[in-house]
Amino acid sequence: MEIKYNEEDRYYLAKKKVENIKGFYANLTSYIGVNIILIVINLWTSPEYLWFFWPLLWWGVGVLFHGLKVFEIFPVLGKDWEERKIKELMEKEKENKKKWQ
Image (cartoon, rainbow, N blue to C red; front, side, top):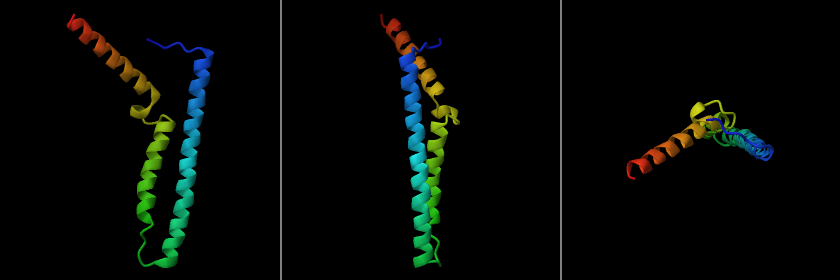
């Protein structure tokens, strides 16, 4: 069952996608900027212990998953998966109602 979108719906979906991409790039930019500052602070104050690695690593994991979701590379996080899951849940609900009638 394919969903037919009119022009207004397609515009809204495209606008939402652009907003998500902008959000990802803002996240990536702040990740790079803040981590450069943390590296400088770390190397300036305590170069014998490199603690900047930890926020770089864990925030990087978050940025990675954000990018996978926004660019729909990871199928479980993508729009197609959401559509299939919604349809599946609607069908289950329909079957449950029929069962109790």
